[in-house]
Image (cartoon, rainbow, N blue to C red; front, side, top):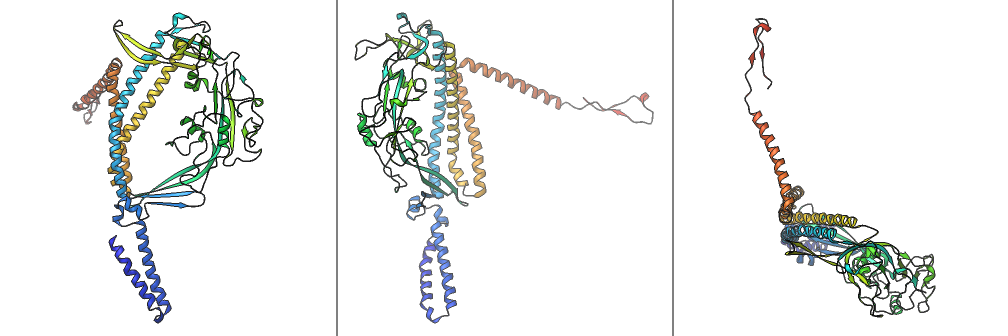
Length: 561
């Protein structure tokens, strides 16, 4: 590198000298000399820019960035491209970090596997407790005081009787309360710009360096998370408009929800799904949410907390609100109009949405669907407004205490709470709970196994990085170390699972080991017998009696055994 840098001033002086005596030299000679020197300078400049010298492969990443070759931003009109180059020295430092992470995964994964097996056994014990202790209530309309504090099972339809449901008073409220509704909500969405990113990684032919190219483009979509950043992070020329969002907040009559915190969710995830993961509070302005206080199943009251904690049971079938209950127009917000789907929007009929447009959806969940419970029966709390509970009984999570040694020893297995949509008896709910628990345990086992194999792979990352400096050995080395990590990780996973079975399921582990030992004994015995037969000496050939053959015929009989 230093040699190339020293050559640059000399080449420049030579080029200047050629131009100095150009007046006394034929034109074609000057032109030829100048072109050759310029080609040399161009080649040297190319070498400097791409750092093909061996020293550049081990240059510190900070120095590489200062030289302009570490990271480069380019605006190509349709988006922004960010190119980052990491040389061999940079990859080696990354490998050291991956080695530390691999050690942590190797240490933590067995602990997680151990905890998962213990959790699985406790969950099965808790489910079996429900099967043995749950009291079946055949008529949930007439619960008994004797079952207070007991684990009960009942099935019935969710009902709100003649109660009507309304949103928070304000211009964005529905025109009239809706009957037979368990939940009603108002969802406000705004059309905003988001960043899309695509990554392309290219390995160097010689060396462990990598060139990563990330292309950022713009997409627009509806989101319930409110106005996004005014300018996109990697596309500052792209801006977002708030539209009439602030007017919607003021018209709702409640404080605006806090802006969503930055998350590590994939950037290409749809905004509505991202809002679900980030838990957008639909009870905050400009959204709206109301739950009926009269909800019950038979004689058991259903609180708002239960409805919100079990969305798959109580909030799985949303329906659009009848169009006549959506206001035709709002005086304080003349930009809004009602479209043919019953939504309020600023988009004109037949037009495409533009940045800053808003749309308001009204949806509700009707009562009358069946729900099955295995819960603890408790006395209902008094209504703060009336002073008396709407229904005498309520439901809660039940504490599971598994007694042993004639009640002298008890294990606290936590709480039990089973709520299912539809009509299911005790055995049906128990079987579904067991199947769900088995599925969760298998998924966690696979995750722990993947983490363990990934940990062993990361542990060898320093060696794979060194091997990747050679074109052919790099790919072979990566494959070989992956096979080693796969074998070692799988062996560790099986060993930890076996020890956990001995700890948490000794009887099942004994049966498995007995069967395995029996099969191993049979296989070893069969192989040994085959070896004994193979090493027995072959008997000598026996000459056939002479009376079977003529005297001049020499015939021998050889045993085939």
